[in-house]
Structure formats: structure tokens, C-alpha cells
Image (cartoon, rainbow, N blue to C red; front, side, top):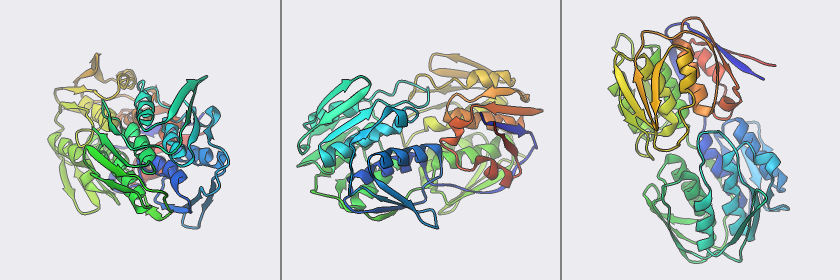
Length: 419
């Protein structure tokens, strides 16, 4: 099993080009099932979850091809199987997103209940209940969701609590439904916006994009188009966090700063100088005091849960006390015990981490427990005295493209041991 080894080299410096967004690419890949003609996607990151998604599509009879520029052409005109089997989707929660497109276009779907990171229950009941309101008959049998319908009907659906994948799944189901669907308390994340823009480019009629109420007027069919996936805001935030913990200067390129407003505000609060252009963000922490910040994770546009682990490391090194409250997932502090092994002073009570800043961390063998926890352990390793070895890095390969190479570009000593 692969490991990442990190040696502290002090400061980092330079530019990092940000890849396409994993959390935007996955639903967009699934949405290609709705198109009657080929789709060409660009800026899709080369990640384990993307590979798994393509395998899921291919298992249904979708033709997938790559060109010399690594664009992906997806032709779902001749689907032969309307099933996402457990063997393929057991490691990826996003696999549930084939349910809406299959049911909308073909009137049937059999989808394994998904797996993925152990960071919380993330139930799919809202997906099921929403599609039942649209006229689907759904049973859960032996770990599979089995759904049938004639043409889905527009419905008025309120999601409580707000759910990103639930919004995406019901949005994809609604675009081919007869009549108008209202999705209330809809997720507003940039990745949801990107999916809606993609669906509209294919001929869907979605209004209210970027707000908490999406209105979908159903259409008869969708056609394939070329489409470019948005940049990954969490990858960008992670490399900017590397600048903060090492008290360095890093610029991320090919990024949309508007997607990171809440995060950039917190970077400024910890003491960093933040500057932006239309498609770059620079964080400069050189010769500046690292201050602790209190934060609460919340749905977009507030502070993202996917940046919580990175800021936990920042606070662990800051001069003073702070709290981080996790409101999205109930089991997302598993990285705390690993950071404590490296010398961090953190105490968890319920959904709140209480942090006392320490002067420094020490390298140790640690274990990644989920995707973003992996990133936090690398950040800790960048400043820890001695060598840090991160085990179970298959988690990080699910969400960070070429992570060793990108850290090398900014002068960090991060390398992979295979076997």
C-alpha cells in the first residue's frame, strides 16, 4: 500500500496550477447519461473517483474516449444496462448520482447503496423521497435502490437539511420530468452551479441557479455539448494553507477566487496577506504572526467542511486558543488523534475541537482517515521536526491530482513509497 513521506524543508514558494474540481466533475460525468448525443468534457481531474465513475458508466454500455488533450468524450446514446453494481461503487458515495439520470431518461434504475469516506452517515433518504414525489416507485432490497417510473412528474420538494448530492440528483431527475419542479433549500455550492450550467448548456431549463430555490421546467430531451469543469476550490485552499503553516508565499493559478470568499476571509484573519486577480490567489505569510481563528463549518457560501482539517493544523500552530465546530458531518474529527501523535494539543467535545497552539510538531507515522484528513497530515508534516509518513494515501488519491509533483514545484519534500 502506498505511503507519502514528508520531510520538513521550512518555507515553500512558487505557483501551483489548480486542477478541475472533483466534486463538480463527478455529477457532471453522471449527468452525461441524460444526453442523447456525445458530450466532450475538459478540465476533468485524473483521480481515482473519476476513474471509478468512468468505469461505472462503461459498465452500462456508455462509450468513453480520450483525445490527445485528455478531453473525455462520453457517448450515452446506447445504454444497455441500467445498473450501478456494488463492486464498482462501494468506495464512492457519488455513485448514487446515477439514480436521477437513469430514472429520468429510461424510467428504471438499480443502484447499490454507496460507500466512501467514513466521515458520517450521509443518508440518501432525501434522494429517494424526492423522486417518489416525482412519481417513482422505489424499493430498497439487499443493499440496492430499485427504482421504476413512467415519465417523472414535476413536484415541489423541500430538502431538509440542505444536501449537495440530494440537490444534484433531484436536479438531474427533474430536467426531463413533465412539468415544473421546485427544489427548495437547494445547495448553492459552486459545484451545484456548475452542474446546473452544464445541464442548461445541453438544453435543460433551470432558473434560480446559485440560489436556494431551483426551478426546473422539464424538457423532452438533452443533447451533448463541449463543457469545461470549474477549478477545484478545495485543492486551491489546501495549497494556500501550506503557505500559511510554513509562513511562506504561494500563488494558485487557474482558480476562481469568488468560490473561496469565506476561506480567504479566514486566511486574512489568521494574519496572511491575501491578493487576487481574475484567476489567481496569492497568500503571503512571510514575517507575519500566525493568529488562531474560531470557525464553524456550514453550507456554501459559509465556511466549507472540506477545509476544516486544514485549518485545524493552522490553529494547532497558532499562538493562542481556538475552537472549530463541525456542523456538516458528525464524524469528521478522526484526524485529531493523528495530529495529537505529532504533538498537537487538541481536545474534542461533541462536534467541537478545542485547540491550544503549540510551538512546533514532530514527525511521526500517521494514518489518513478520509480525503481532507490526508491533506491536513501532509500540511502538518511540512512543518514537523523530522520525517512524517502518511499511510493509507488512497484517500488522498481520490481528491488531489499529482499531489507530490505539485508540492515539489513549491519546494516541499513530499514523495511516494509504493508497495
